[in-house]
Length: 451
Image (tube, rainbow, N blue to C red; front, side):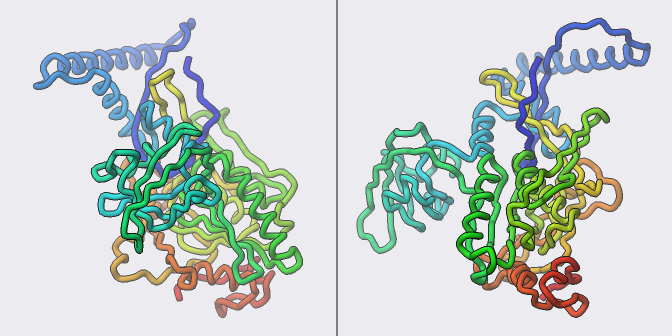
């Protein structure tokens, strides 16, 4: 029998898949209705077999049998929900790299521009940064192969590889007349899912971009660094920015929430059967020592980030600022399908916030709504439709909500939600309906604002 792994995913990735497996035979007593259902299932499987053989024998070109099977498996789950999917062996490996947050590579964040690879930024203390690779460098060749014609994923795959192996990059840099040849030795790279800085000299700002295996440790490190850097007495509080965070591992969402809580339930997950219900609770030890916390969310905050936001909001541990979140309230379990056969990503449960709320197809409403000023050329692309707009999504009890702003200004000085968070921590009155004073502001946030 195949066994589920302990990897539980909470992210907004979509797809479809299914698998068949055989269990050990066992003696069962079935009623007439059960026998009828089983008989009908076998008839449907016979129909599938007939169609499969007809396609193999009569299709205009000889099909690849394995591709036919994979397509059939994917098609079977399409009608279940948008988050169940089949992953072939390569996709499964890529998913493991993503959730592990660690891989053999060069340490550069890249994007595609005009068919070439553009460096967004080198990651500190990696082969790329040590070799002098710079933001805005254009990579034209990987070893002797031109990048032109490759997809971004193909180029990234070529740059990754076993630790201590070499790769040669040809780089065009603005201000340099000739291309630059750089030979790099791949090293173990850790994806930084947590970044931090000081805000207004007395506030700790922490950005969480995803929930991989490195996230909780990164959060703990940055809380400690900021507390030391600013000084515990001077520190007004923390801003936790989870805008456009698509989610990730359930376990990391639980431990990140736990970092700010002393006690109480963090999340419960409920499957089809009542005995599958699980509840996760906080352990004593608030890493921030009770400092005020503001959490930034928007329409791109999904799943694992919604678990954290929901837990801190329900326990009144944080004030949520921004726009309504994505609304993905389901849990996916990764089930490997055997050597070389990839894996199944299957929706196995819904999750609920500590107050017993399901946010499925609704999202989390922030305590203070702040709408950003969006450039005219981007106005048609800055709203996220949300879970409720996805075909085949799990239905919610009550009114479903779709669509929420997800634009984050690239320049912090134009970021209204960030400014609102800083004002709250400084005790600045932000609305006539809200009392003044630091504690009063955070315990009783202001009403909706859009200025």
